[in-house]
Each structure stands twice: as C-alpha cells, then as structure tokens.
Amino acid sequence: MIQCLSPVVFEGPSLKECPKCYFINSNTAKNCKKCGFEFKKTKEEEEEEIIIQLQQMNKWQSLDFLADATFEELELYARAKGYNKNWIKHQLKTEQDFIDYGKYKGYKNGWHKY
Image (cartoon, rainbow, N blue to C red; front, side, top):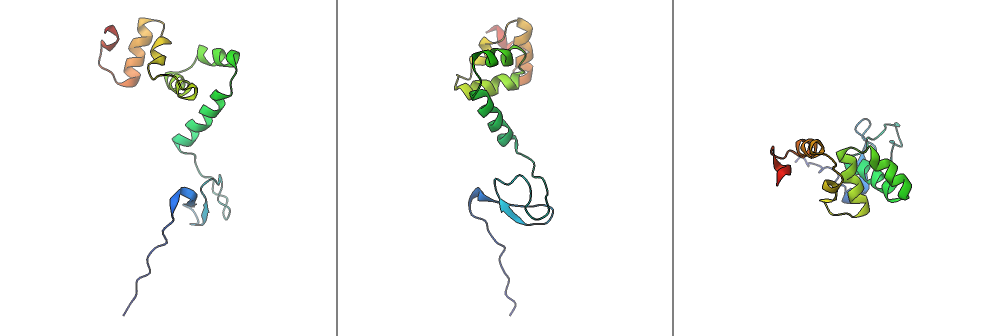
C-alpha cells in the first residue's frame, strides 16, 4: 500500500514561502534568507507604511503634502487621520475637481450636482 504524504500546512500569516527556492521565511522577511529573493510588498503593506508616515507629519508638512496630493493620496491621508470618508469632497475646489474625482471613483456623470 502506498501512503500519500500530505503537504505541510502553515498556520497563520506568520510564514511565507520563497517562490524561487521554496524556503520557508518569516512573514516579515523582506528577502529570502536562503537565496536572497526580494519579496514584493503587497498594496496593503505599502499603504500601511504611507499611513504611518502621514500620521507622523506635523501641520506644515501636512499642508505641503495636501497641496498637490492625488485622489489616492487624499484618501490615504483621510484614513491616516481618521477622517470621515466624505472629507475628501471638502478638499475639491473646482467643478472640474469634482468631475475628475467622479471619474476616479467610477461615479456616473453628473453625480456632483446633487
């Protein structure tokens, strides 16, 4: 009788496998400890790092950041500061800003007139 060995199951998010050499690394490892493969950050990890930086900004740094922030950056800033999800709409200055934001969010044309 042939016995089938079951694959190793990792419990929790504390371990990750290298896609190059299959070495098991800590989930927080930036590089594989065996072959040096560089793990790419997930979008969530990148956003979390940005949020931490935004939380540490003083008033003047924040004003400078907000002066030319993209819609995505404004949404991250609102999350970092714990603002209401509608806060960003108060940052839009012109009708064209509202139209552009609506396109970014996938809203229907004319949403900003309500």
